[in-house]
Image (cartoon, rainbow, N blue to C red):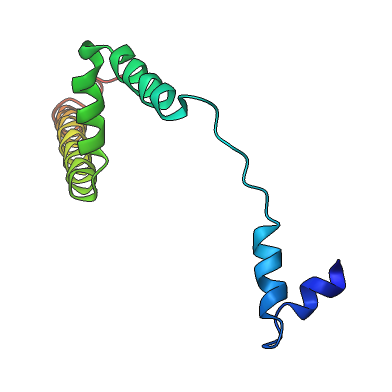
Length: 109
């Protein structure tokens, strides 16, 4: 059999190539195969609860590159803003401590 498959590529073996193509089994489909496939598709679509359909659409849109990049930019901006606010509060408390230490050096002890 290996020899026949190797020889199938030669130009003079057209009959052998046709014989090999015919020898590939083509099992018959079960009765009403298409009908059962479409029924399963309809059942699967009907099982999707409408309450989560909006969530699925939102997640699909969020995963688009332009929205993903915009989301990352918003998270970065929120982080910078939060860090700036925290840093300003920290700087203000350090300034108060330095002022108090310069006015009344023994008050912090």
